[in-house]
Length: 81
Image (tube, rainbow, N blue to C red; front, top):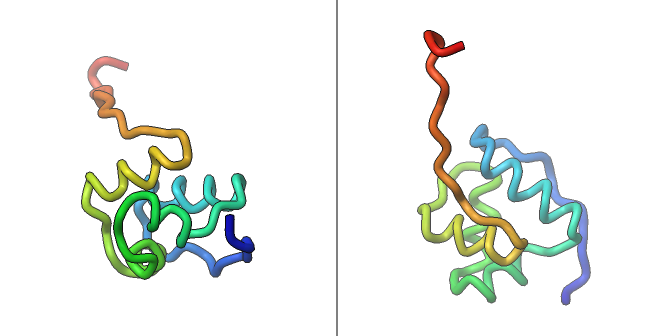
C-alpha cells in the first residue's frame, strides 16, 4: 500500500468516474495501486479525472478492486411515474 495523498477536484462530469474517485478517497487507495492490480498504467486513471473517458472493461476492473461492479439499470420513463 502506497502513501495516500489528496488529489485535485474531479473535472470529468461522468457520475461513475466521480463515484470511483470519491470511493478511492474514502478507502484511501491511490491510483497506482488500482492501476497495477487492474493491468494498466497509473496515468490512465489520472487522466480519467481530467479529460478521458475510460473503457468499460478498465472501469470495471478499477471498481472491482474497490469492491464494486457495474450494473445496468433500466431508466424509468416519465409516463410510468
